[in-house]
Image (cartoon, rainbow, N blue to C red; front, side):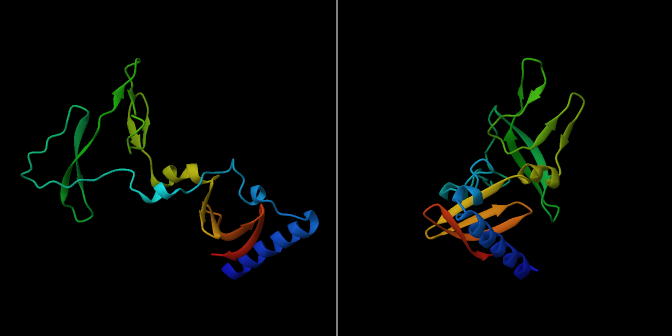
Length: 158
């Protein structure tokens, strides 16, 4: 199946190249479609610290505690940033938190993993590593390419 997909991608590029003389890099990697992977994407966005049970650590005023079990049922006391209150009195999520919460007037509903990934459906991400460029389009393609003089050559499908 993967071989058929790669073959079709190569045929598309060849057809496009034959009929239009060039396949420009922005036709392969449109800038408006997604973002890029930078070196910083390898760095963790959030820091997790584990403290022993007898630790004198206490949350500051900007944090609240929540008990969460791991997959084995062991409970952990987690400290998370508090929700801010807006002028209307409704909770507002801080921009720098990792919480993915949908706010309603009556309840707070956590999003499912599928709902969280929904924002990636129309996005493609590009990473350039030396001679190679990699394009990842969520639930669509993962391609390894080499770009030369703004003309994209599909070398290999992964």
